[in-house]
Image (cartoon, rainbow, N blue to C red; front, side, top):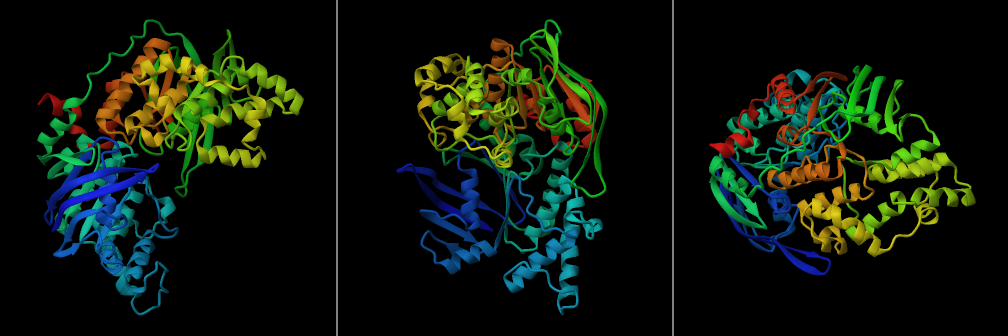
Length: 573
């Protein structure tokens, strides 16, 4: 049994003290799943790290199996808390290469030796560790995959193997932090069923932090609603969820499509890619797809189906082996997969948001918008071309510099290192922008996103999670793009914040006519935000049409019974 009483946690942020948890008290019985929900930034993940023993706390008591832990407990006591707890983090794929069972053997060996070295197969305790490992694999439904390489496992199988590794630590408390957020419906179902089974077999307290209402309806026995570091409500899952969702804004109606004017043609593209999973390939074979002006199109499908690869081909970042990706640009069709001087002008029209989006923590939102305006603002390309001649920078390099701000930090750093480009090149090539220019340019965008203009003066640390996301959308919209591409950027948002973001996207689409292509695993979001959805399966577009019908087809294919209770059905009960 777990008992938490009067837990308090303070952080020092920019020389200011911020209380992130205030007087948190609750219990979790053996064999019970306690769900925790709340808006982004409410303190959910901080609470889990404290219970894990890796984060200090300022006041209160944690009691696990009769052993008490205090803010001033010594290191040995806190090590005991760490030994008796296990945590499964979102987006965690930290696995050893080699057969799946060796990941479990290594974890068992760490209990005895203090490290995860792999013991020799002829060591005295190897057979015993092997048998114990098999039991953990069977617990998560992977007994038949014991000798399969970790690289050959699917996303859902990897998640279950990670769970088995945590169980091999013999925890007395299991903590799950958004365990299925960034996965497709099929993978979610696999992992959720394993968690339900663990409840029966382990008989230990289990805490699941998630913003997904359908997840809590499927597995949580009780629910805590956390907001601004306070427990607002605790009780029956359905009741607490309804109260949590009561402040959700009503849906903004999507702008109707009056005519279909094609602006992007994906024409007979073929691309063969080897997957990390051994012996499998992703094979696009003459796939064709049209995107219409002012349309919001969502690409959906299981993990590994090819959605992100297709989006990268549409963006011109991954060239197809054959076929074309054509954009209507100044009255003519331009293939984005091949360099021409006109492609740089086309790139000014496109903006992207990827899964790992983030704002720089060291600059204000206004400074970051100013940087985007400097590169893609009015007259910036003409200015840069003149400067490039003086600096002997080729059009090909200029084309790449136009792409870099839309890439992830990892991709950007890799390309700059390969091309031996330093960040100072932007200051040399592109014109300066005043803060007044930024303010004037941002006003209309901020109004559409329901953001106060004073956020321009703040750093990401000084704004809420929902404001952070909308500020990043504002950044992506800074250059007034005609086309906005989004690769699962909102997967870890709570439903209240997600509704605000969804409404914002629809306002942007209505007011600016922005064409949007979105990759998402979140079916409620897809149904709500899209004019049209395309179901991708094994690198093929197998269904294209009404977002509700296409999403329901994916749910059916995935056997995702956890989605039988949707957020809308809960609110209407």
